[in-house]
Image (cartoon, rainbow, N blue to C red; front, top):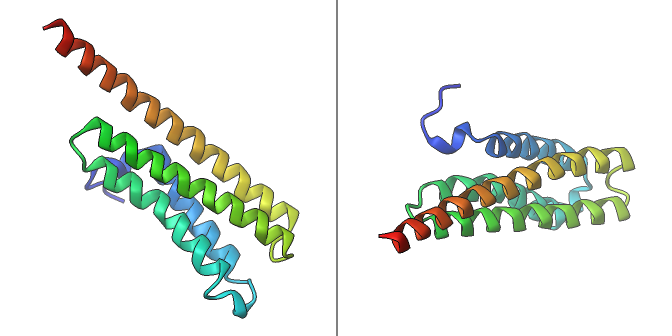
Length: 132
Protein backbone atom coordinates (compact mmCIF):
# COMPACT_ATOMS: atom_id res chain seq x y z
CA UNK A 1 0.00 0.00 0.00
CA UNK A 2 1.35 3.41 -0.95
CA UNK A 3 1.60 5.93 1.88
CA UNK A 4 -0.04 9.26 1.09
CA UNK A 5 0.22 10.78 4.56
CA UNK A 6 2.98 10.82 7.17
CA UNK A 7 0.94 9.06 9.87
CA UNK A 8 0.63 5.97 7.66
CA UNK A 9 4.35 5.35 8.13
CA UNK A 10 4.07 5.28 11.93
CA UNK A 11 4.43 1.82 13.49
CA UNK A 12 1.83 2.72 16.09
CA UNK A 13 -0.72 3.58 13.41
CA UNK A 14 0.00 0.30 11.58
CA UNK A 15 -0.35 -1.65 14.85
CA UNK A 16 -3.58 0.22 15.52
CA UNK A 17 -4.96 -0.97 12.19
CA UNK A 18 -4.18 -4.56 13.18
CA UNK A 19 -5.99 -3.98 16.46
CA UNK A 20 -9.11 -2.65 14.71
CA UNK A 21 -9.26 -5.79 12.56
CA UNK A 22 -8.73 -7.96 15.65
CA UNK A 23 -11.55 -6.17 17.52
CA UNK A 24 -13.99 -6.40 14.61
CA UNK A 25 -13.29 -10.11 14.12
CA UNK A 26 -13.53 -10.73 17.86
CA UNK A 27 -16.83 -8.90 18.29
CA UNK A 28 -18.40 -10.57 15.25
CA UNK A 29 -19.14 -13.55 17.49
CA UNK A 30 -20.59 -11.57 20.41
CA UNK A 31 -24.31 -12.00 21.14
CA UNK A 32 -26.58 -10.02 18.81
CA UNK A 33 -28.12 -8.28 21.82
CA UNK A 34 -24.76 -6.53 22.32
CA UNK A 35 -24.83 -4.89 18.87
CA UNK A 36 -25.64 -1.48 20.37
CA UNK A 37 -23.82 -2.16 23.62
CA UNK A 38 -20.29 -3.34 24.06
CA UNK A 39 -19.78 -4.20 20.37
CA UNK A 40 -20.46 -0.64 19.29
CA UNK A 41 -18.47 0.83 22.17
CA UNK A 42 -15.29 -1.23 21.73
CA UNK A 43 -15.33 -0.86 17.95
CA UNK A 44 -15.65 2.92 18.15
CA UNK A 45 -12.90 3.13 20.77
CA UNK A 46 -10.54 0.93 18.74
CA UNK A 47 -11.04 3.06 15.64
CA UNK A 48 -10.53 6.16 17.75
CA UNK A 49 -6.94 5.09 18.39
CA UNK A 50 -5.88 5.30 14.75
CA UNK A 51 -8.18 8.24 14.01
CA UNK A 52 -6.61 10.39 16.71
CA UNK A 53 -3.09 9.48 15.62
CA UNK A 54 -4.01 10.58 12.10
CA UNK A 55 -5.76 13.75 13.20
CA UNK A 56 -2.93 14.70 15.54
CA UNK A 57 -0.39 14.33 12.76
CA UNK A 58 -2.17 17.10 10.86
CA UNK A 59 -1.63 19.62 13.65
CA UNK A 60 1.26 22.04 13.34
CA UNK A 61 1.58 22.63 17.07
CA UNK A 62 3.52 19.99 19.00
CA UNK A 63 1.26 20.65 22.02
CA UNK A 64 -1.75 19.71 19.89
CA UNK A 65 0.03 16.64 18.51
CA UNK A 66 0.79 15.53 22.07
CA UNK A 67 -2.86 16.03 23.05
CA UNK A 68 -4.09 13.79 20.22
CA UNK A 69 -1.60 11.07 21.19
CA UNK A 70 -2.99 11.32 24.73
CA UNK A 71 -6.53 10.95 23.40
CA UNK A 72 -5.47 7.88 21.39
CA UNK A 73 -3.91 6.44 24.56
CA UNK A 74 -7.17 7.03 26.42
CA UNK A 75 -9.08 5.19 23.71
CA UNK A 76 -6.65 2.28 23.97
CA UNK A 77 -7.26 2.03 27.73
CA UNK A 78 -11.00 2.27 27.12
CA UNK A 79 -10.81 -0.81 24.89
CA UNK A 80 -8.75 -2.59 27.55
CA UNK A 81 -11.55 -2.10 30.08
CA UNK A 82 -14.05 -3.34 27.51
CA UNK A 83 -11.92 -6.44 26.88
CA UNK A 84 -11.96 -7.12 30.63
CA UNK A 85 -15.75 -6.76 30.68
CA UNK A 86 -16.03 -9.03 27.63
CA UNK A 87 -13.96 -11.65 29.46
CA UNK A 88 -16.03 -11.25 32.64
CA UNK A 89 -19.25 -11.66 30.65
CA UNK A 90 -17.96 -14.78 28.90
CA UNK A 91 -17.97 -13.20 25.44
CA UNK A 92 -14.24 -13.91 24.92
CA UNK A 93 -11.82 -16.55 26.14
CA UNK A 94 -8.77 -15.92 28.33
CA UNK A 95 -6.60 -16.58 25.25
CA UNK A 96 -8.47 -13.99 23.17
CA UNK A 97 -8.11 -11.52 26.01
CA UNK A 98 -4.37 -12.16 26.15
CA UNK A 99 -3.99 -11.60 22.40
CA UNK A 100 -5.87 -8.31 22.65
CA UNK A 101 -3.92 -7.30 25.73
CA UNK A 102 -0.60 -7.99 23.99
CA UNK A 103 -1.61 -5.88 21.00
CA UNK A 104 -2.65 -3.09 23.36
CA UNK A 105 0.67 -3.23 25.22
CA UNK A 106 2.49 -2.75 21.93
CA UNK A 107 0.21 0.13 20.97
CA UNK A 108 0.42 1.91 24.32
CA UNK A 109 4.21 1.53 24.42
CA UNK A 110 4.45 3.01 20.93
CA UNK A 111 2.05 5.82 21.85
CA UNK A 112 4.21 6.64 24.88
CA UNK A 113 7.30 6.68 22.67
CA UNK A 114 5.57 8.98 20.17
CA UNK A 115 4.43 11.31 22.95
CA UNK A 116 7.93 11.40 24.46
CA UNK A 117 9.39 12.19 21.04
CA UNK A 118 6.98 15.11 20.65
CA UNK A 119 7.76 16.34 24.17
CA UNK A 120 11.49 16.21 23.45
CA UNK A 121 11.02 18.22 20.26
CA UNK A 122 8.79 20.71 22.09
CA UNK A 123 11.40 21.15 24.82
CA UNK A 124 14.11 21.66 22.20
CA UNK A 125 11.98 24.31 20.48
CA UNK A 126 11.35 26.05 23.79
CA UNK A 127 15.05 25.96 24.71
CA UNK A 128 16.02 27.33 21.29
CA UNK A 129 13.55 30.20 21.68
CA UNK A 130 14.90 31.00 25.15
CA UNK A 131 18.48 30.97 23.84
CA UNK A 132 17.70 33.54 21.16
